[in-house]
Length: 148
Image 1: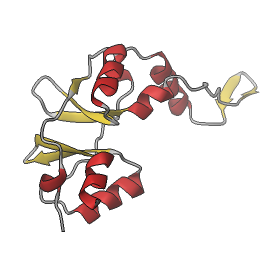
Image 2: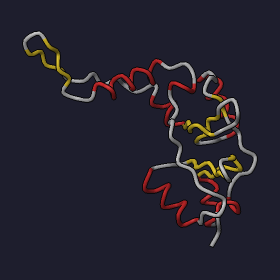
Image 3: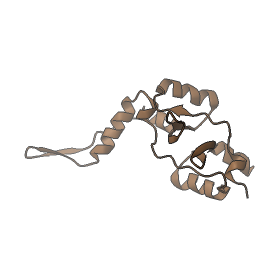
Image 4: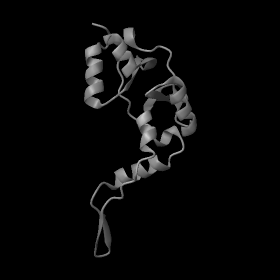
């Protein structure tokens, strides 16, 4: 059975959270990635940003239903989700749209665990970390290539 280090892409393109979204779009187009790890100034992985995050920027904003009761306004849906959606829709940098808690795997993780994670968590890009250091990335294309 294959493991992460056998199927991962070793030449990893990363982005910083301060990168403008327009430049991120060009990276996705140029490299044909579904997602890339987001790193801090010390190259520690702090999240992941995907094509889906870019697409969400152009969706219609759902205004939560509110009711007025006496002098108070009550949200019938999550106010935090609405605030998060507004931030994403108006974002200009990776920081505004990326997922802050990237799920990662180790170099010895077997392909069955990788595919299970991808399917159950609806993840298409997995950073591969060895003792906290980014050593590779696994995308859908890597998994399909390993299965072929």
